[in-house]
Every structure is written in structure tokens, then in C-alpha cells.
Image (cartoon, rainbow, N blue to C red; front, side, top):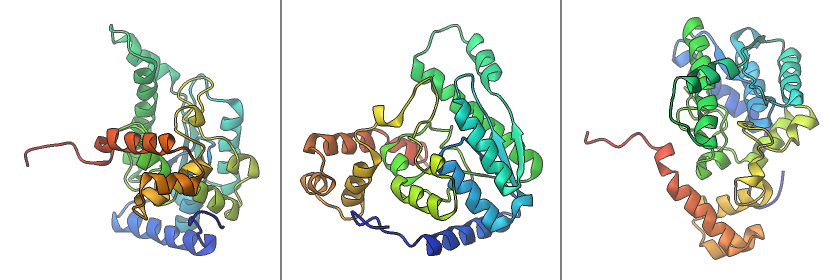
Amino acid sequence: MSGGGLEIEAAREADRIASFIFETVHGAHAGGVVVGLSGGIDSAVVGALCVRALGKGKVLALLMPSAHTPREDLEDARNLAGSWGVRREEVPISGSVEAIMASVKARGTRLARANVQARVRMILNYYRANSLGYLVAGTGDRSETLLGYFTKWGDGGADFLPIAHLFKTQVRYLGAYLGIPEEVVAKPASPQLWAGQQAVDEIPADYGSLDIALHYLFDLNAKPAEAAAAAGLPLGVVKEVLEMHAKTEHKRELPPSLA
């Protein structure tokens, strides 16, 4: 892989992450892992690496579709789990979400409702993990983490984060190396928390450019103008990236306390 200083050696990286997964799970005396499998690239790569590290018998793929989950995403998730030979459970979440919303009299925003979905999925991941003596494998990548583009205590809730050090473009590259189908590797990113949701509509730029800017800003300590030039982005977009990072700092830290 080349370009923008984001090069990785896929074979070496896959082995390194698999070792991390193995050591984390065994260090916690856990019997395996639960992976919330969405049909997107991040969860696909995490699932594949967990199978590589632990074997198919110690990985549970939990599919949690909502009423507006695209059928192709569900089919991709099923096919991935089938190709790995892991246990697969499907738990539709719409009924749980509707029950929660029906219990709340105040009408919330679309985002507030969307976050309920992410947190219901977190609850289900932990329910199955606690029932089995497993850990929950998080699926967030570094691009999403730096932008705060995830739900606090939702998809951000996990026991360990195998790919949180990799930018989205690096995850895609690693996915291709691991044999993830091209339709999943190239699929546009989306949390799928409402119909038609696309990450590109909610983040400052496409991940190809964005990851270069993030690398320059947070790895090289470059000035915004330098990051903008390297990524081929307007300076205003890079400033928006920095603003998103600052506003979401609370998502990356423990809650404030006087301790």
C-alpha cells in the first residue's frame, strides 16, 4: 500500500493484530469473542482477524439488523460468517428500539433515536458475551475515533479495539489482503442508523483525503495548511476536522470526576 504516508505491510499487520487479540482474550481468561457483524469493512476485518487469532469455534458473529438495514448488508454479513464457519446469531433490534421509544414521552431528535439503536446493539453484544464468558471485540477504526464519529456507549462500547490504530483506508487495504470480498471492501461507509445514511454526508471529506489530513495533523503534528496541502483539501475542511476532534474529546476520555 502506498500514498500519503499511510503505508502498511498487510501480512505483518495481520499477524500483529491476531497476536494482540489472542493475548487479550487469553489474558482475560475469556472463552472467545463476540463480534457485531454489520456487513461493513470494519467489522468484517475484525471478524476475520478474530478467527485467525482464536479459531472459528471461539468467535460468535452477532447480526443485529434494524428495519432499515439494507438487505445487501445483511446478506454480506451472513456470507462472511458462513465463509469463516463461525457461529452466527441474528437478533433484529427494531422491536427493542420501539419499546424504548414508546416508554419515553418526549420526542427526541433523529440523532437521539439513532443512538438508541447503537446502544441496543451494545447491550446485545454484552449480553451474549457475558452469557458465554466472552469479550466484546470493538470494530471502530482510527479515522472514526479521531473524528468522534461513533456513538458513545454504543459502537464505542467494547472490551478491546483491534483496529483502532488503523485509518479507514488502511482497514480497507488489510481487508483485501484477508480475502474480504471486494463488494465489502469497497462498500461506502455508513453506520446505517437511518434509511439512506452515508458517512460521506456527515464527515468533512471522503476517507481517502481525510485519512491523509488526519495523519498529518495527529502523527506529524503538521499545521492545518500543511495537512490541507498534503491531502488536497481546502483549509476550511481541515479546520472542520479539527473542530470535530475537539468537540468529541469527551468520547475518547473517561467521564470527568474529582478523583
